[in-house]
Length: 382
Image (cartoon, rainbow, N blue to C red; front, side):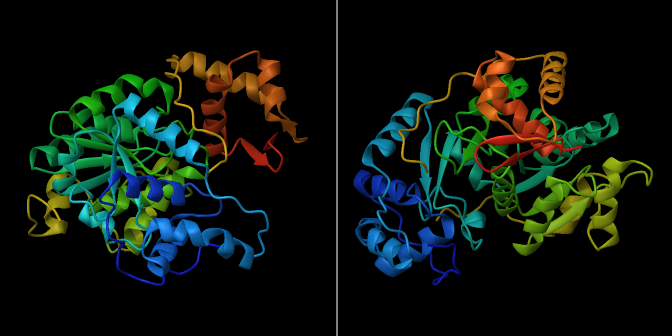
């Protein structure tokens, strides 16, 4: 089975019973079933129960013998983890599911939410940018988030370091939404544990991933389409010429959203992506009024409308200082070279818990300093 073009533009009817929700989760967590395949199967078979019954034969037709759908125990474990984390499941078509997100072609069938889903009724603005933001960049992010929040917008970002963190902090009182690359109960990066806790109290955390899933580099681009899909407009504050923020901007354009960018000095690599966006037609942003002007008249509210093993809830992430994180970065880079090394061997050499090393490996992978190779191998990029 492959991710194919959607055969229907109509979302499936939302699940109305616990049995339906269980079946939706089981279908979505089955091997080789991504978002697009989920939508196609639902369009072809009408219900998740029917799609699950047909899935083994669909897999055989695609050349996958001995295919097994997701075991019920995996879903039981995910639901148990969700109850422990006080997470709520939002399904496509539900009254609480955000309508703007439902409009995109690859809308997540299900989202785990921790916090206040009422924020999804507000008009939303995405604010994204560099993780290694400059002091001016973080100041701009804070100012935009605060002023847009005061005008009635919820601020959407990705809980990353730098621009994202500044935006969330400035919008805590007015309303902020953190879209997470891993499980909604897995805080990444570790230094944002307190911020994530505050967002759960007064804002909202969202994720389409299973509970307890540690984020990997490939999860972040998928996360970015949700940030832009939720938002009426996406503002890029600082971004290098090749960065995840530009992926979010591209997603926003594909989804018909407004894209805006804060200009920067031509000599600052952190501004290169923003300057390119402006060169290519993105609206230049100096302050919150520029964003509001770009949107034009806008209503203040929306209309309501994979693995085979059980997923274990993540342990609370360790809080580390920036100095400790930098030291761990150096230890990892010192042990890796161009020749691939097994990740479990690296963890043993470091004599550190896997849950401590894992997020740091994601950092280094996103920074382009290491790469993952087939078979669980890691290598340093020279």
